Length: 107
Image (cartoon, rainbow, N blue to C red; front, side, top):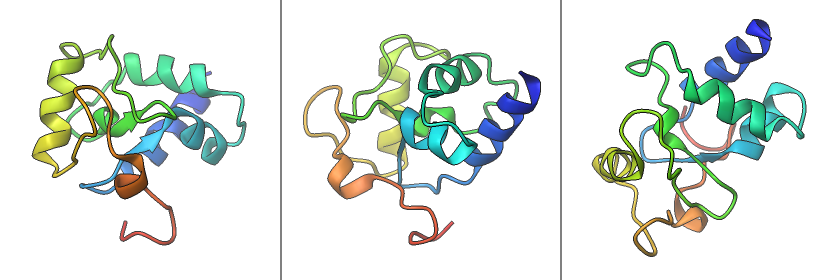
């Protein structure tokens, strides 16, 4: 499982400032589109939050995590806003504008 988590962390490190990715997107890039929950588990035990920006991962609807591992959804919202991410309501990122497109967006 450690290799899977390492693969997930390497992908999450590539999400540029000002962009978000979804759990499913990270799972697909890691090799298995069914690993969305595995992505969540990996991010929950993030060993290096300073270099692995797990706060940039949201659900497919753009919702932040209510169980954000480093202080709850309010902390995740503040971190995303500091990156320049805008929300359509209190807990949903504007994914149409801010979703990361690997290979198309600057990495």
